[in-house]
Image (cartoon, rainbow, N blue to C red; front, top):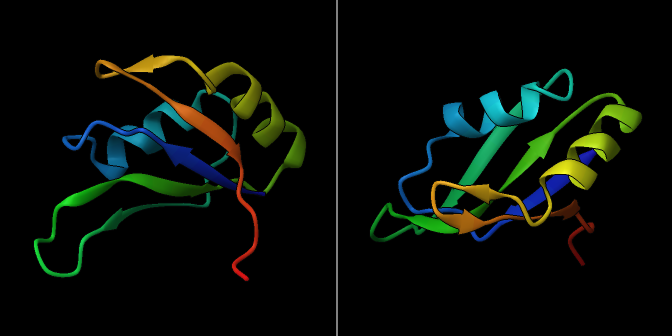
Length: 81
């Protein structure tokens, strides 16, 4: 399952995000989206988890939780249109 993670603190690294999600299961990949010009985080990213039940557990437990002073927005990513 591809999971959207929003409202990230700009200091969050992909390794930090991976650690948080690994609490709930296997993480295939983590990608924090960065501005092409400045290289700075845009404050959101995506986490890929192979097991849907583990991913659902992560979404339920992490959505609205505080991480580095910001309240996370976590939900299933919608496909690009």
